[in-house]
Picture 1 (cartoon, rainbow, N blue to C red):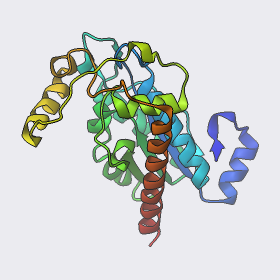
Picture 2 (picture 1 turned 90 degrees about the horizontal axis):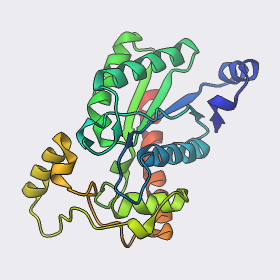
Picture 3 (picture 1 turned 45 degrees about the vertical axis):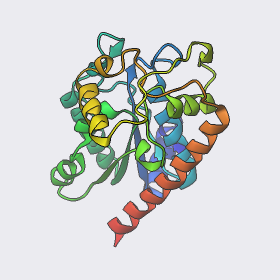
Picture 4 (picture 1 turned 30 degrees about the horizontal axis):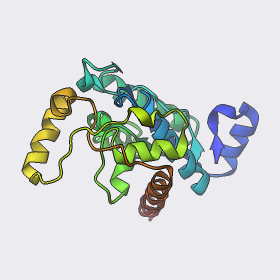
Length: 240
């Protein structure tokens, strides 16, 4: 792995010239995650996932874009940017990478509210670059078998595995969907996209109370294994 922000210009340019490089841009959010997890949770998790992925694969790791599209969490705390703003920043960053002769980019997403911003961004950037740039946007939670949550078992376990900034004594059950039909859960999901507090009144989707560091380590390993395979598939298909 090469952590971009720690590099020096001459050696970095030499590295890029020597070998075709793949860059990783992690994107997260700053928003409420219940009373027990920090507002940086999404950014913290996606930063760790992206760092480990870059270490595994030898990718260039860019600094995390810590702000995302989180307006749906109001009136709970959130620091949000518009969908168009995030899309513009990502487009500019990818174009800048291409200008530095880095032609393959993975955008690793850690927040559901960012999905609209990254939808079809690969097509837009291929067109803008006249097919010189290949961009893949991947949301890490699609690479685990468990049902994902918000400040519930999965996110809390992941945070316990990577951070000490957790207050488990304050963890409480949130919205529990066990026993609900797929349609009921889908309806709640749509409501949460508009107003998360209306769907999950205490800001938690799931049950964090039984989360453990060990579970987090297992979940993180699963994500990295499956995400790593997907990245390799993307690169293989692109080169063929």
